[in-house]
Amino acid sequence: MIGQLPCNNERKLLSLMKLGAQKAVGFDISDNAIQEAKHLAEIAKVDAIFERMNILDIN
Image (tube, rainbow, N blue to C red; front, top):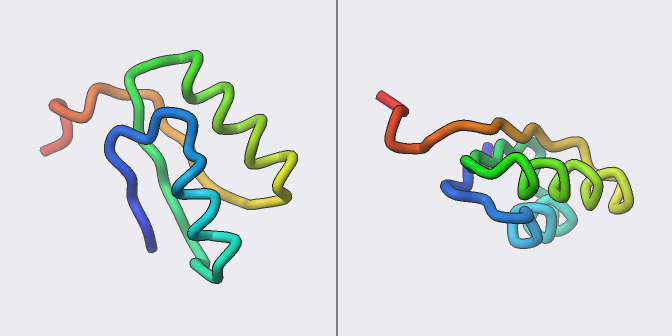
């Protein structure tokens, strides 16, 4: 599993999934970044999870 903090638009995470990673989660505080990441994942036909949150709140 891959996690990316903050993920921005997820291009790096999506690239790693295309190279063979099985599961991935991206976190970002920006609603726009998460929406763009979901859109790019749909285009790339990649099943990744994107969560909108402040990474400083992760315990």
